Each structure stands twice: as structure tokens, then as C-alpha cells.
Image (cartoon, rainbow, N blue to C red; front, side):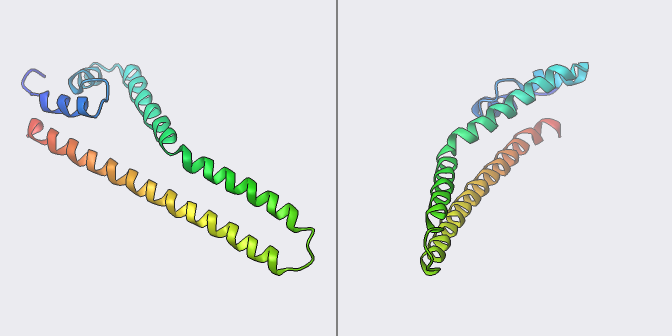
Length: 131
């Protein structure tokens, strides 16, 4: 592997705070030490997943709050015999849940867009090394 210059790839990975170098990962792959590679990749995936949950915890809290409030409302509404008030309340509850669903979709869309941009950047950096 001394013929290849991985400095730009390592610089890109350091900017992304990955925590390991590309050359080190490639050497482990060539030596057949798949257990260490798996552990490192799983640690990175775990860190990214937990980071995503902590960044979007407000959406989860809002959804839980709306669901609990909606359940309490439905329990109270059963006492009324008139059907218009409960129906309007149910529609409002569903409207709030749909709003949260659209917000979650936007967060997911931004996440996927960021991942694709990072993958494209990584491929742009790694292409000159292997050509």
C-alpha cells in the first residue's frame, strides 16, 4: 500500500470525526482482521444512531405528549353524548400527528441528503487515489 497516498481521504475522515484512518482500515481488511473492522464500524454506526436520536429528541417528546393528551381527550370525550365535539377533537388530534409526521419526514429527508452529500464527497476524494 505504499504506492497510494491516502492523505486526502484521511483528512476527509478526520473532518467527519470518524476516529480511524482509511489506510489503517484498509490494512486491517487486507490482513483479514474482520472482527476489529466490524467492531469499529458498529461503534461508528452506534454513535451516529444515538447522535441522531439525541438531536431529534424534541420530536419524540412532542409525539409522546400529543399521544398522551389525545388518549386523555378521548377518555374524557366518551362522557359526551353529542358527536360534533368529539369528532372535531379527533380531527385536531390527527392533524397534529400528521404535522409531526411531515416534520419527521423533513428531518429524514435532510438526513438522507446529508448522507448522500458525504458519500459523494468521499468518492470525490478517493477517486484520484485509485485511478
